[in-house]
Length: 168
Image (cartoon, rainbow, N blue to C red; front, side, top):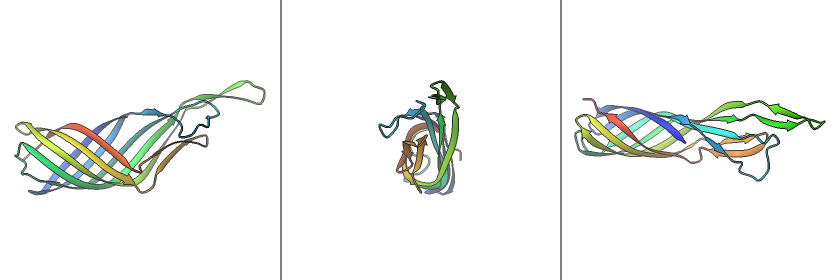
């Protein structure tokens, strides 16, 4: 899975910030059924999960430090876009019939905590390594023609490296 991580932080105090964060999916992954039951039309499901929310972040050193560890907590929404590929079924006479490609997005409220290390590269430019861990209010269940394919959101997590520009 791949995502484009977007975030902004508004410093309310030297050691507290309000944050906006989004993990926007850029690619998905094909998932296999959670069971040995075959899907009647032999189609597959591709999922692309994402999340967005707002929260607070606490840096443990001042913004000019070479290394700035941070902890945060956020609430928002998580979603999964599931797309079923086209498949083929046999009708009552044994003739193949195509099934259409279908997509659906399912969302749920979510909360997560995050930890990050921001490293100063040059002037206001920094590199950040971040991880987050949380859960949705309920599992997002994905099925294909009644066959369970995947559950997402209990728990959820993300890790990444990003560039950061720290403005005064």
